Amino acid sequence: MRNKSVTYSTARVFQAVADPTRRALLDLLRSGSRHAGEIAEAFPVSRPAISRHLRRLHRAQLVQEHREGRYRVYQLNPEPLRAVDSWLDHYRTFWKMNLSSLKSFVEAEHAKETGQKNPPKSQRRRKQRS
Image 1 (cartoon, rainbow, N blue to C red):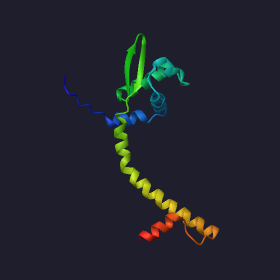
Image 2 (tube, rainbow, N blue to C red):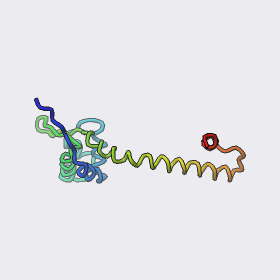
Image 3 (cartoon, rainbow, N blue to C red):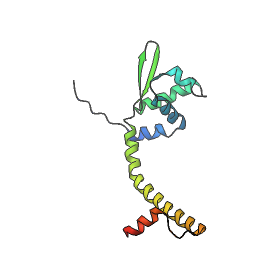
Image 4 (cartoon, rainbow, N blue to C red):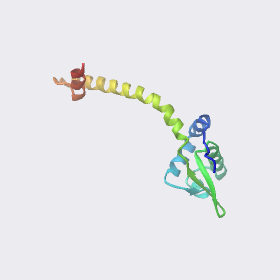
């Protein structure tokens, strides 16, 4: 048996998760495998529409499909989402810095408004490091 390397198209993954219905489908499949009819019943759109969404998710390799008797069963394949996570990772540092700055600003404003003499712990720690 050959060792098969799998590569995922990040463009397809991003296009697939851009749609709120497809994200809801992925959320539904997080709890386990489901057959197509069961998936369709969970949404207020037509079965053909759900089928198109599932096909798009399948092409992006976000879901795997197999047959059980006359049913098509779908299950989540989270591996392609690593590309999304990797892309987002570059922004996490940015968000953490900005949220930290926002927290300091809000705490300082709150201290001014309430007439607090001692700043909150997070501000004291920051001053000690300086």
